[in-house]
Length: 307
Image: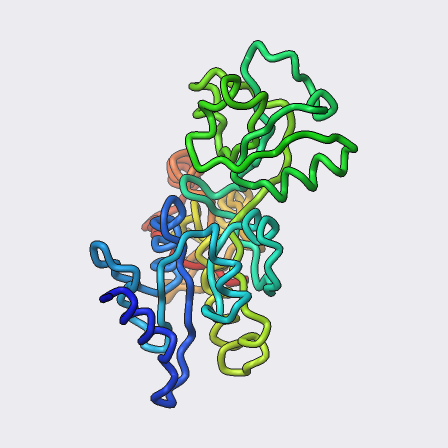
C-alpha cells in the first residue's frame, strides 16, 4: 500500500502547478554506474534502502527506479518523461520513444555491451545457419527472432527468466546472452559464435514530453552534462609553468583536445601551459616534462568536458 501511495504521488506531481521532469533511473546492474555518472554530471541522487524513489538534489527532477527492461515501455506510455535504458531494450520492446543521446557506458566499463550467440565448447554449431530447427534461450526474444529472420533461419526461441548460461546444452541448443568481456560465458564453458547486437545506454524521451518546451530543455541540459561527464572519463587536466624558450620542446610532447592553452605569467619570460590528457599518459609525461624545463606541474581531475 505504501508503494502504491508513493506511485500515486509520483504520477500527480504537477498538480501543484510546478513543472517537474519525471525521470526513470535503471534499477539493477546499471543502477550504480548511472548514479555515479549523474553525480559527475552534477546531479545528486540519494537512494534509500528498499525505496524506489531516490531523493534528488534538483527539485525540478522527480526520479523513480525501474528495471531497464521496462523503462522504454513506461517512457512511451508517458509515465516517465525521460529515462535511462539500453538500446537493446528499446529495440526489444519496440517502444515509441525518442532517442535523445547515445551514452556509451555500461555496468562495468565505458564501452558497448554485446548480445552474442553462444554454444557449448563442443557444440557442432559454427554459424547462424546451423541454428535451423534448434532451440535458443534468451531474454531478448524479439531481437533474436528478427536476427534469425534476417538470415532466413527458423528456430524455436524461448524466453529465459535468468541463469541463461547454464541452459545450454541441457535445456537449449544455444543461447543469446549479453556480455561485456565474455568472462562469464567462458566460465560456463561456452564459446561465442556470432554477435547479434551491440548495445549501449541511451537517454530516451516521451515524444509528448519532448514537445513541451520546458521539459525538452531540461532533458537536453541533462543529456549535455551527462555526455560531458562521459567524455571526461579517464582524462585529467595538466598545468605547468615554463620559460618561453622551452615552450616548443614541451608542447611537442603534449597531447590536447585541440592545442594546449598558453598564457603569460607576471614574471617576464615565463608562461603557463594547460592541457587535457588521458590519465594513463601522466606517469610517462610528467618526468619528461620536468626534464624539458617544466616547473610547478599540477595534475587535476575532471568531471565534465563539454566541446
